[in-house]
Image 1: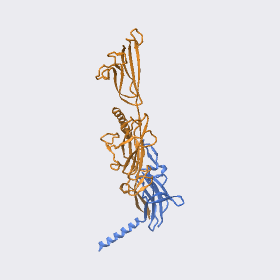
Image 2: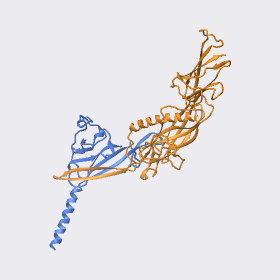
Image 3: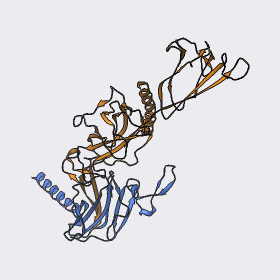
Length: 159
Length: 333
């Protein structure tokens, strides 16, 4: 009987902790843009699922953080390694109310794009360019209220 | 004629080897890109705090890279291929490159009835560079058969293709003949941007690239006809110490031979001894070296090959050969 009580306590505790973990949900979606021409002959750029992607295609990654819990969440940081088969598209990262920083060293350190340097072939530091970026990071400057969701995004070109 | 063909072939063999090394050293300008069928995964992490305790969550999304179909055909010979008229099995060398991101195979065809040239080469066969040395090797390289052994190339891979044509007779020096090799992808071709579901590697969509999935290039033959020039002169030395053509006078004939416009093979100079004169035995020379009067290992004879005639075999001469000078003496009867 004692064992049973302990077991059920453990189960409750487990359930409780996983509920905390699920306070913020994150979802990432990949899309591409296709240009269609409507009946009036106007060009319409549509975002669609990446059904056809070849080298050179720009993929738009949208990352949405949502507070599914009952309490506000703070210190929200979204970190996204740029897939190694792609190159970050210069100036494409966006997130309202966030500070966007990048890494050029595999995620060890982050800084604003214009402050990053990498070493050239001769070992001398040079300004980093978009293709040097290994990670994108959005640091939220606001709290995410219960039920609130906030999207950020960037574009990557398939190598 | 055979000798001429062999010489030209050898000449181009050397050039082709140089060209091959140039190719090996040359890196592709554009990276072909991520291979078709590769999955690209984006994983995102969100870190946060609620009520002082931190948590994190992750999600990822994956898509598969489709196949872009691109091909390039490029004529490799450094200059027009010199040919005779008629001529046989003249080789044009092309390089076929898969500039797409998947494995592809190509059907090949040759078009010889093109505008802008003076004659149409006659296709013998197309050969695939079986030993991958960039040079046509008869009996080694594989004859191409349309639809049967269409060359298969991985992304960024290249293969030399040899087009052998015959050259018609009765052409003029300087005439050009164009021969066009076309390679078309069996995976997808047509309007750039057109896509074909499941046609690519790993059942990906095949998308026609900027090349339209097809590429061609033109190789050029140029007819070279050699012109052999002979300049004959005579110096007379009469018995009285003058230069009058009187009986007993010695006439020293000199024939200067040169070639322009191409290679002349097996050049043989024959010159009958003039009437009413007698050849002075032992006076035949070639480039200041004495030749015997009989047929033997040296280049000439007098009266042995043909009665009462000087015969000198000069072999193959090119415009680069030094002027060949033949001299002999006769005495006026």
